[in-house]
Image (cartoon, rainbow, N blue to C red):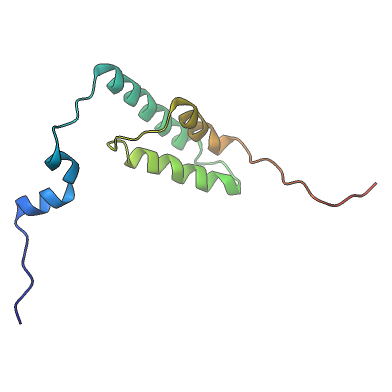
Length: 104
């Protein structure tokens, strides 16, 4: 039985980041960099302020913000409206569910 083939560092890098190996490197403009810096600062601020917040919605909102920060280098980013929702989510309580209880 033959042992499994070990990858060289170059092969591991090629497998890890296939997007950079296939095409030219992505060029980010100064305007995009400024927008990204602003969004990162606002997301980190929202995470810091939401530490003491309570409610079922807070954990999910914080997880979404952390995921956003982890995926900054991916090409598909949320639009401005969706980002605003992400930042405000830990502080905005979810809408109350309507009950079918018809008491007078």
